[in-house]
Image (cartoon, protein in one colour):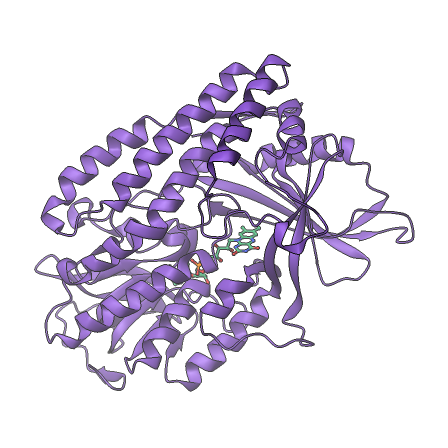
Length: 488
Ligand SMILES: Cc1cc2nc3c(=O)[nH]c(=O)nc-3n(C[C@H](O)[C@H](O)[C@H](O)COP(=O)(O)OP(=O)(O)OC[C@H]3O[C@@H](n4cnc5c(N)ncnc54)[C@H](O)[C@@H]3O)c2cc1C
């Protein structure tokens, strides 16, 4: 273990660096939420961590102002929590309301969310990290990996127009959707190098709105327009909200779907104060997250909740798993090989990874349902099982553990409502069959991920079978009045 960052003269025979070689146990590319959490876990265990971040100090995370964290996962992270009454924490909410496209069904669901200003959260966290000894090199951009005997031993970054070399026992790619390090790996290194294409992401548009006549009735915040994959959420402004939408393919698709929603939503007049946009991964992660001296996390590993596109707390479970395995690996006075890191794959994919893979597959069945079908599905509570609204315990909490357990009675009710829907022509037989088939495939995919090979030697045959399963996943077509969007 390197207790403190050592700086050693560059003895590397490349000759193109004016700078020195900087060395630490773990080197993380990117200073977003994924990197910050893993750094925090590792520095608390006594390991030296360096982060390189291409943005300036104070600019990190500014691409998004307001972001939702799942409160229970934030609490379970162990991180010092944002304090009430500070500008960082806009509010904490327990429930959300899911609205049908005909606006007749309003279903209250439990959704424990903390609404946080991301740049302020990161600023506070970076302060804590630096006080614990983590080195954050701002304005320092990853350029390329350094290999010895074809194995990663460090990287080269650019800072103030100069190339700087960093040596580390482990390089972590937490560079977000660009996945700068992962996509630069040689194909034979053992981690897929795909870049996120337009169909691998959700294009998210956010409008910070202010009601022009706040006294006129307007929807309460935390409304989910499920069919449109759109929502209203708190912006921190008493008389305003964030109107958000996420769609595959392009921002243009998201814009058109939002226009369709607005034609029916009947919102009172509002002014758009500012707009933000960005992409969030909507695809399966690489089959392996690790290789020799390498790990990828966060958006760089395409780890987001399939049903919401949220990625912040989605990756923290992986970080916890990784921290345990990395600690064991670092304790061995040896090169951090793929084999030493393999347990990260096993422990992640057997549990959360398997559940996310299944949910992602199920969604390809659900996305085909039309506006009319969604009205029926929500009216009949086929997705959100509600009980007595007065009883707090009866409020459904979808995706709590990323799986829906149904009693036999509930399964029978579900099937009979589906059949009735088909008979009454509220649901198309084709779409119901697609749902059944994608659910069947989801079960197989989940089981397969639960059997993620403990021995890296079995990985190739596991991957072949996984590819076969993913190839069976069908393209979903989401039809809006003015655009049809393909989900692969
Ligand atoms: C509009 C929108 C709304 C969202 N809302 C939510 C939400 O409410 N809740 C939620 O959980 N998630 C939300 N997400 C998703 C969430 O923002 C991401 O999943 C999460 O921020 C990913 O964190 P990360 O640390 O992996 O990557 P990032 O936060 O993207 O951090 C990566 C960092 O790496 C740096 N970097 C990139 N390339 C290099 C390089 N070559 N060298 C050095 N540094 C580099 C970047 O500057 C950046 O600071 C939203 C996404 C969008 C687009």
